[in-house]
Image 1 (cartoon, one colour):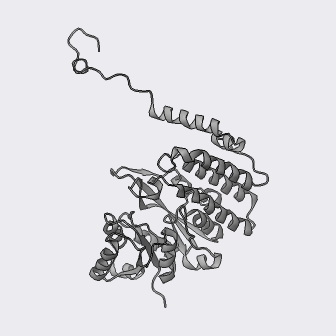
Image 2: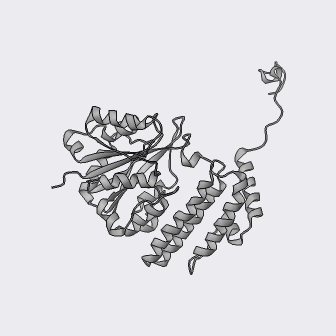
Length: 344
C-alpha cells in the first residue's frame, strides 16, 4: 500500500543562496507521521554552481531527500518531468527552488487533500520582493469563488496547484520545453479536473525580481510564450470546450501577452514592435467565434493592429506612473528650516 500522499518536486538550477531555505521550509514543523506521508524529490538540472553537491550533502544529512542528477541542462519544464517520473505520491506539488513555504503549509495541504480528495487543490500565495516586502497577488480573490469560471483566472503557475498524479496521465499532461512552460500546464489541469478544492490560505512565498529569474531577464526567449499558447489552445480545442471557456482563455492569453509586451525587464525596446505584431497575429488566429470583445483600450489597439497607438499609450501610462518630472535641486540653504518671517 502506498503511504506517500504528497510528492514535492523541486527543480534546481543556480539557486545556491536560496536552496536550503526552500528545502527546510517543506519539512518544517511536520511530525513523524506527517513526514512519512511526504516525499521530496530534488532535480539537479545540471546546475553549473554548487547546487548538486549541496543537494547530496543535504540528503546525506537528513536522509529524507531523493536527488536526481541530470547529465545536461534541460530547463525547468523537463526537470519537473524528471522529478514527476520518480514520484510515488498520490498528489504532486511542484515547488520552485528559489521560493519557500510558510510555516504549516504542508500540514494544511495534507489535511485538505485527505478531507476532500480533489483532482486539484489550489492555494494562495504572497509575492515577496528581494527587499522583503510581501504583497498579495491581484488574482488571489478568485479563490473565494469555487466555480471554474472564477478559478481559471488564478495566476497560471504550476506551484499554486497541487495535482492528483493520476490526472496528469489521464489527461496526457506534462511540461513541455521552453520558457513559460506553465501556460500549457496550469489551466489544462483545471479544465481536466472533475473535482477542484480550494485552500484559501497563503501556502507559498513567490520570490520576484531575483537576479537571473526568467521574468527579470531580457531575452528573445520571451517570444517562446507564443509556442506555449499554441500548445495550450490546441489541447483545449481537442477537448471541445464550451464557448464561454474559450472566450475566457482567449482574454487571458491577450492579457498575458500584453504584460510581456509592456515589460521593460523582459523585452528590449528593439524587440517590442515585433512582439506586438506577433500578438496581433495570434489575436486574429485564435479569435473565437462569438467573442464579445473586451472593453480595455489595449485590447482594442491589438484588435486594430496599431503599434504606434499602443506605443504612445504605453509611454503615457509610464509618465503617469512616474509622476511629474522633479524640478531643479533646492540649494542647501533653502532646503533647511526657513528663517523666522519667511512663509513655509
